[in-house]
Amino acid sequence: MNGSRSFPGPFMPASPDAPAKEHIMPASWSRQFVTDEGGATAIEYALLGALIAVVITGAVSVVGTEVHTLYQRVCTTVSSVMGGGAC
Image 1 (tube, rainbow, N blue to C red):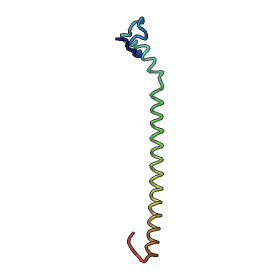
Image 2 (spheres, rainbow, N blue to C red; image 1 turned 45 degrees about the vertical axis):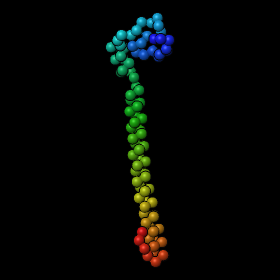
Image 3 (cartoon, one colour; image 1 turned 90 degrees about the horizontal axis):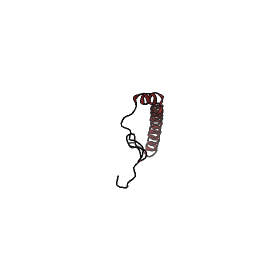
Image 4 (cartoon, rainbow, N blue to C red; image 1 turned 180 degrees about the horizontal axis):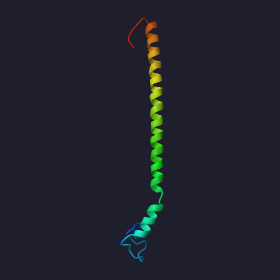
């Protein structure tokens, strides 16, 4: 490898003296797949993030409508005090 270091991978020996892995054992792979909960955790975080996004969108929509109504009321009041005009 021309003196360069690389990290061991699934098909690369962990040390120069260790034999290379040519295949993954199906029994150990299936056992690891069944017991691994990393994907479930990722899905839970994605659902939680989506729920938070929906709540934020709803809150911004309600507050935005209320702010728009407030500005319209202020504009109408100022226009009537100033002698008319368009808002």
